[in-house]
Amino acid sequence: MDYNFRTLNYLGSKLRLLDFIEAKVMDVTPKGAGVCDLFAGSGCVSRKLSRLFSVVSCDVQAYSKVICNALLNRFDITDNMIDDFFVVSNNESANALREAFYPLIDLEESAIKNKNIETLTCILEHGSIEVFNIEHNFSWLSDKLTDVYNNLKKHRLNDIRSLASRYYGGVYFSYRQAVEIDILLEGIHRFVGDKNRDIFLAALLSTASDVVDTVGKHFAQPIKARDSKGNIKSTVYNKAVKDKTVDVATRYREWLIKYINLAKRDCQHITMNVDYVKCLKTLPDNIRTVYADPPYTRDHYSRYYHVLETLTLRDSPRLSTVTNYGSTHVSNGIYRENRYQSPFCIKSKAPEAFRKMFELVSITGRNLLLSYSPYDETKKTHPRVVSMQLLTSLAKEYFNNVEIVSAGSFKHNKLNSTEYLLDASDEAELLIVCTNND
Image 1 (cartoon, rainbow, N blue to C red):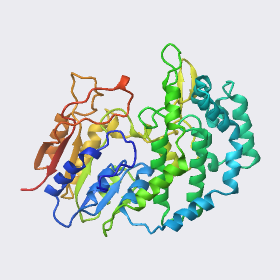
Image 2 (cartoon, helix red, strand yellow; image 1 turned 180 degrees about the horizontal axis):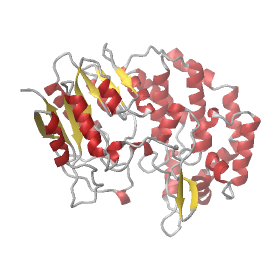
Image 3 (cartoon, rainbow, N blue to C red; image 1 turned 60 degrees about the vertical axis):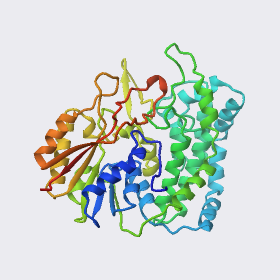
Image 4 (cartoon, rainbow, N blue to C red; image 1 turned 180 degrees about the vertical axis):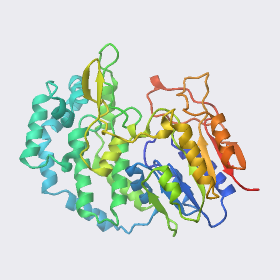
């Protein structure tokens, strides 16, 4: 059923728990009332709940709002409009961008064809033009990086029209894929009206998630090309063949058609790009249940999806830096500077953040369903910044009824290579159901 719809390769995705979540929401939500998905992420829960309820979908990340809008609301798009989009996007400016990047595209594709893992490794480690322009670190790739950047200046394309190509080409995507992403992104902003833009952009975000050349298909960091001894890993070539050869335009058209063909109820849904506090303070009166799935570990989700955020904002961000042994350099993940840091991921701030959430839901007489993945101290899972005991204790301060419901045996996809897989609890998901019913 297309109400169980995957948009992204997403850390801790609730895709396999959707029926369980929907059933528990139904148990506590009056007929005709609406629900809020407070930390919407990839949008799969919002999409599922829209089958039966009007939904307010909220996330502090802009890419999530775009995806949720595409999942929840109606768009009037014909096959002719899709065909016309590809025609007008494939214009003189698009060809100029392809031409500007040709030296790097040709180098990378020749390396894949000839199984030249040394070249592929150099591209992974030094291939970002934006990072090169900041650090000017010398490698045998430097001349080609300089040539391509000069080509961009010559064609006056060294701006947001080459955003994905300059920042992430060669590293997260092949150079050709990054160029095609930029071409589609330019087409979306130039030729698609505001009314339909989000569905075209959501399809591009899903495409980027599909083709990215990383272990786990997220954007926390590029492939580590070398082992601890400095030897090049076999995964460099294997992943390049699997991921970097995928045709972006073809995959994008497939995703666009998937989004367009989604069934939609004739219902008013709202998407919000704000933090949880502002959302809870401004919810419409018809919303009677809040589903919340905040992050629980020290891993900030913004680290895993920063490329999607940049493609959404299209803002040429400054890049964050790290300092090791007195040397400062751009972060390996090519992260955005000042990317969002959730208080739920910070041990000193998380208890107060949960307390605030409980308070804001309770004072409006709404129900709260809080997802929680148990932590087994005997295994190697990342510790939760708050315990189940603390959460239930806080919840009971604000709600008359607090019940813990299990989804049964379930393990999350952690999007990691097998050598780094952390064990998961056999009972990997609980719902803390909080109500003020007598």
